[in-house]
Image 1 (cartoon, one colour):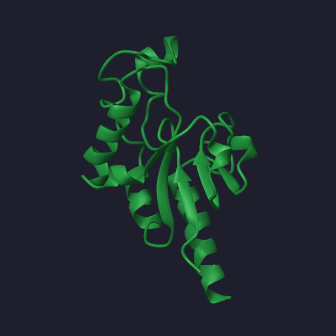
Image 2: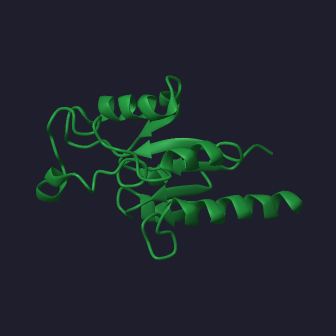
Length: 147
């Protein structure tokens, strides 16, 4: 049996777009360079790298009306995770169509609520940050490996 699959949303999970002033006025920001300029959320890059040791990890993001969003999201991934990391990028407005074990997402739209695996609701009371997500997924993985 292969590794379990984890999907990582980008916006609000890996990339911190909530802290941008222009997001608050227009969540579908259309300016060129917006996505590319986002900072990573604290702990996100290290969490992706660590979880990749135990799981098959992919980015799963919904494309925005911003025509630049897809190319800039790819650039962002390469900037923070290396030139080959873009091969782990999947875009879809129907996240429920993908097969996998876990989906780390800060929202329940675009098929997240219907995803067949477990939704890890990033930013929620149970999973407020990357430390809580890592604790759950790494501890759980080690427990399962001992069975």
